[in-house]
View 1 (cartoon, rainbow, N blue to C red):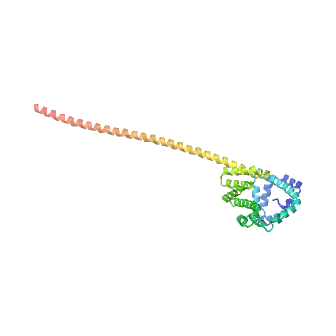
View 2 (cartoon, rainbow, N blue to C red):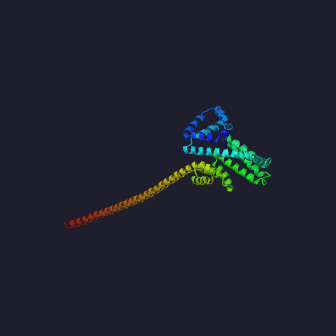
Length: 324
């Protein structure tokens, strides 16, 4: 949705403003605007025709702008121009379609479709105020109302479309609150019946934040494949970031695999050295035992020799004495 002040701009004025914009200029402007007081921000937003945005949300938007890379800024700039062009085309077409739209709204007046649409709108207003949990609750109420209504069969197609939008909005809220499992659940339900850009994109972002980069890349790539030119520009930076993370992950896995292989080699070498040490000690112990045994045998022989020598000495002594 374009800010109201843009409605009064001619295509030439819009193009001139866009040509003036560059990343450095917008970052400096964002920093300056973020530094204003709450009352100054509210006054500024009122002048711009956007009084529904809170000062906190405005500062958050300025911070996001300051943190953008040049490529992201240029992508957003292209989207702004495209949206402005589409807005002008729609404004021209709206003059001829006002009667048709009025008839369409009258068609659902007083029906469950009107009631659910109103509840969805209340959820949207809560989202804009960054009351995400309350917005989620309102969207679920809208879905429940559409499923339990007596008119659900009569307006089946319209209610299915409203449910899809509500679930996508719930996924957007849960991305804000970092409930990534919740995002995956809502987008999975949508994708069962409708392969839409927003479901693929939000599913991919949730998986990215859960560091499941392989799956995230597949969903983001699907989003890019079915998106229009502006949507492709939105998803491109996320795809590039996912590619970088995939490369980093693969590099870490490769390094970890090499580390484990080296550890295994060290363990094998250590085990081999332990076996060699054990064999050496065993041989050493055997030599020691053999040497001790040999010593014992030599001592035994020596004792026997002395005993035997003493015996012969006595024998010859007796003979000698006898002859004398």
